[in-house]
Structures are given as C-alpha cells and as structure tokens.
Image (cartoon, rainbow, N blue to C red):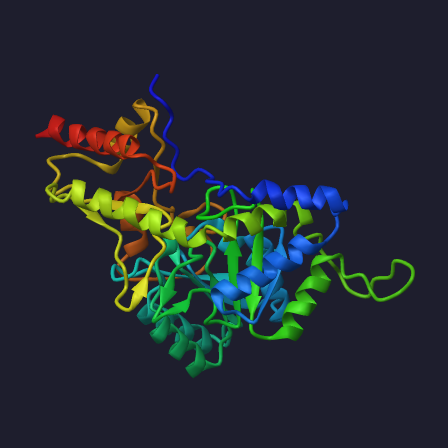
Length: 380
C-alpha cells in the first residue's frame, strides 16, 4: 500500500509545544489564561478586526452571532446552499428558518442576484430576513461589494462565515472583517489548526464581551454561581490556544504554500481541457485552502468526478466531492431555496477537492497528478 496522502492534514510550525509547555509550567490548563488572551490579540493583529473571542468551534461562533442578533423562533436567515452544514445548523438551534440561496459560477459563493430575489420575495411574504450569512467557500472571496451594498440597502446584518478563509483578502482587507460578525475555524483540516476551535470577530467591543459572557455559561458577577441568562460552554481552553499561537506564527507561510499547491496542479493539468479550477474574484486573494476542480464530461471522453475520486482512493490518496448543497440534504430539504440555474448542484455533481496540505512534497503532488492523468488516458 502506498503512503497515505491526506486531503488537508495539520501542519505544525514548531513553537506550538513551547506555548503548551508554558501553560503547564504556569498551571493554566483548563481555564482561560495568557494563551487565550494572546491568541485573540494575534487574530486581531492579523485580520485587522478590533475584537476577537476564541471559542470551541466555528459553529459555536455562528451560534453566538445569531444569538447576539436576536435571532429566534420564527425568524428567517439567508444563507448559501453551497456550504457545509455547520453554517446552517446554528440557525436551526435558534428555531429559526434557513432560506437557501444558490451560487454563481463567478465565485462559487452566494449569488447577489438570487440574494436580492430572495430578500424581496421574503419581504413580500411578510418575513424580512433577520440576517444574511455569507460564506467564503474554499478560501475564496464572495462578491463582497455587491453583497454588502445589498445588505445595507435592506438593513440586514451580515455574518461572514470565513471558517475556510483565514489569510484571504478582498480589496486588501481580510475576509471576516466586512460583516457585523466574522467567523473563523481552526478545525484539524483548516489552513491553521488548534486541533479544534474557532473565533468570533467584530469591531464592536460590547458584542464580543457579551459573546465571551455567553460562552462561559453566562455566569453573573457574584461570589456564588448565579445565572440570569442561558449560557454555553463555548470558550477555548488555554492549552488549545497555545497551539493556535504557534500556528499564527506561520500563517503567512501556510497561505503561500497552499497557493503554490494550487498553481502546481493548474500548470500540471493545463493540457486536459475537461479540467477547470475554482475561480478567484478580481481584487481578491484566496488562501486556496483546498484546490478544487470541475470535470466537464462533454470534454472528458466519459471521465467523471467519481472516476477520478475512486482512482485516487485506490492509490491511497484522499479526495472528496465538493459540498452537497443544503437544500438537497434530507434534513433541510423542506426549507425555501432561491436559484433558477442550480449552480450549486452542478458544482457538487462535477467537482472534486484535491489534496492541498501545506506539507505536501513534490513527490506527493506528482503522484496525485499521475493518477489523474492516467484516469483520463484510460478513457481516451
């Protein structure tokens, strides 16, 4: 069996153990501590956000953002259908209704035209959306100028799900800093990791302070345990934050490495007309968290996305289809969906994520390319 090549494995920088050792030496293990405080400062310095709350996951960050916006039972929240379920689940936690919107081919992210259609139709029905969640899928910017103008026009607050997009920018500004709230994830497969974790970004100190309060079980100021609101166990531990501090020291190198992986694949496969790559919006710089391809079966001689995925798997190489749209998921199929061109469904049916880790060697990359080329040659 050949060595396993993973889709997006963790890549340590070297100083993570130092910060963890500091926590042990100071006995800051389970509660909050200096690593959490400094990790939050690192995130603010890197992104330009004024405030950051380090949390247990990106999902927790979305959930708290919805709570802080007052989203509750019967409310409606716009979100892209082309995303991971973690974007959508917190809407349901609040007993609100997700309103799914299709993508466009220009960005693969939520389509401004369909978003406008959805807003106007929900208003016509007497249900103006209480929030708009914008996702920067696979580390590529959504059409932020158009979408933020749209949100301002209708007075709808924006939650930016930048879980996959740390290190990416639009017009020189970090993704995750355009909306009222920004969301980051440090899950094990992200561009940097804390093994598990996330963060909530905002330029409003009072909102982030309230998020920290809710994330630590909403304990009131009292010598005893007193609670006037429902709280959550959503804060990041001082040990986990130590990993994050070490990872933040190498974030720029990780973005550079991922972009070089993308460039390698694009150059190595450029002579196969059936393969195209995920777009990058003008005036943006994606972090290329994952390199994603689309296979045009009309040009492929019959080769499908599944043919390539199975061929890679047979050689012990991990790849995966693009996200299955939320409106096609059994758990969400009863919710409204806006999109006449079914772009998200088409991308799911034809798209594949290739191994994209920043620790991939030239040998690894050449092996992936060789399998892909061999798959197309078999059909020719």
